[in-house]
Image (tube, rainbow, N blue to C red; front, top):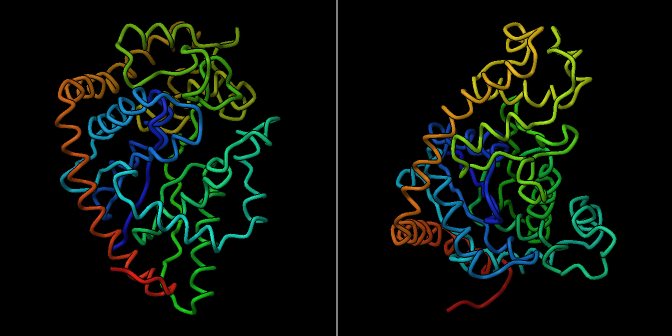
Length: 332
């Protein structure tokens, strides 16, 4: 059976972009794939963090997965650091990854910025750990956004390099899955920038923990232009803030942008935003309520993660035993 692996970092709050671009698609994948969903907490320590906040974020992201519709009984749901195989395979892969491959990774350049010399090794080698995350479970498919596609291509390269070096087809080369029209939701304050957990303005995003009043306020305050909504998608694409709100409406209602425009062309943004508030609250309200319920019992979340780690660990241990035999490492 084809196997999915995917994960999110437990850094601050998940938002509407995470839901529309990833979580909603993951829920649909449960029907046709064996799915492994990970809270990638080891990746989260490549940037500044506070231990007590990280622990709470791990639980919050786990609650978001479940509240969005991921079944932790049918699928494997766990936090990355609970399975030692991730770190073990990361080191093996690090010994088969040329520096030239990592030097081409654009995300490191973006995140390190002007302070590249002060960036930590973990941030630089982040894509190698991501390759280990995926290939530890011999995943055949990985749902990714455009910003992670380069990292998945590197995972395929690393898996292929391992296979060639040891002259055997051990690791499958996972295929990317880019699903849905609204895989890229933009900031409510700047339609040219992706909605992000790291944006300083909380008004730039709709968090999955926002209550209905907060969602309504953020949508009403979202940046727009003075013109009414256009009739065609071609006109819409010249207006980034308008395009973003129409894209969100289309995604939340399961329609194409042209169908949203057919209903709202010529409308002022005040009226359109009111309709968008209704749809957003109806969709996100139940998710937020379920997240809050789950977070009221942290012991249960920890139990779910522990059980998921046991199931993931069984697969990982089998892979690592084979890897050690192939590489020539002795094992107990």
